[in-house]
Amino acid sequence: TQLLEQSPQFLSIQEGENLTVYCNSSSVFSSLQWYRQEPGEGPVLLVTVVTGGEVKKLKRLTFQFGDARKDSSLHITAAQPGDTGLYLCAGAKGQGAQKLVFGQGTRLTINP
Amino acid sequence: DTAVSQTPKYLVTQMGNDKSIKCEQNLGHDTMYWYKQDSKKFLKIMFSYNNKELIINETVPNRFSPKSPDKAHLNLHINSLELGDSAVYFCASSPPGARGVRAHYGYTFGSGTRLTVV
Image (cartoon, rainbow over all chains, first blue to last red; front, side, top):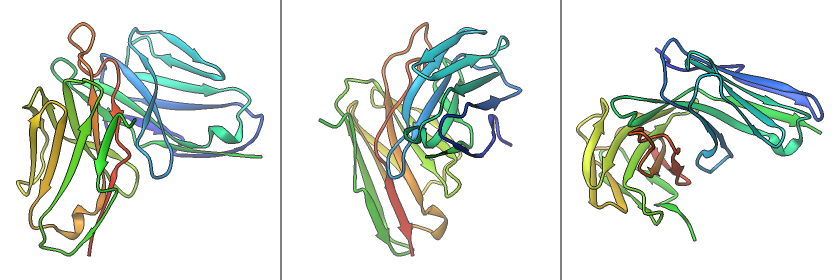
């Protein structure tokens, strides 16, 4: 059973379009993070959201944490080929939130 | 000036062999982790150490034994390798969190070790 469900799993769009990736769960997390992973490399942290309803912006990327802290979304405006990659959401769970549980990832391809 | 470094990057070995993967971090973090990423890119935690003490041990076969000689190193030894062990193994580290939330500030991952058992 997957704790965190990401959708879509695959997304291929044209440069300049907007897109949203969703990360959903029935569990409450103390914080939720988004990572981006390139081929042959480890995931790299993009953002951490902690408070329900929190919105964070990173240039053309907007991250939102759901009010109930069970879900999150990543919105990219005017996507560019450099945004291509595997996007992973991860929620902090356990006593003292000692571990991250990851979603299965969204493979994003931006075509020139 | 690599923050979390793993060696080797690639490891091809035969079934039944014993192998080790080494991990070192120079970030001064107090917690280190091993994650396994399968062919579908799903990342699952295996172990976590805080200041050399094991704090998370997920349902991992006894053939996997982590060792942390100090808080900057976390090695993974695997005995009697099986075909199903083939995957990419990632080491990661994290600093003390905020409000007791250890994962609060995110993890720094190494670049992974691709293990292929033939």
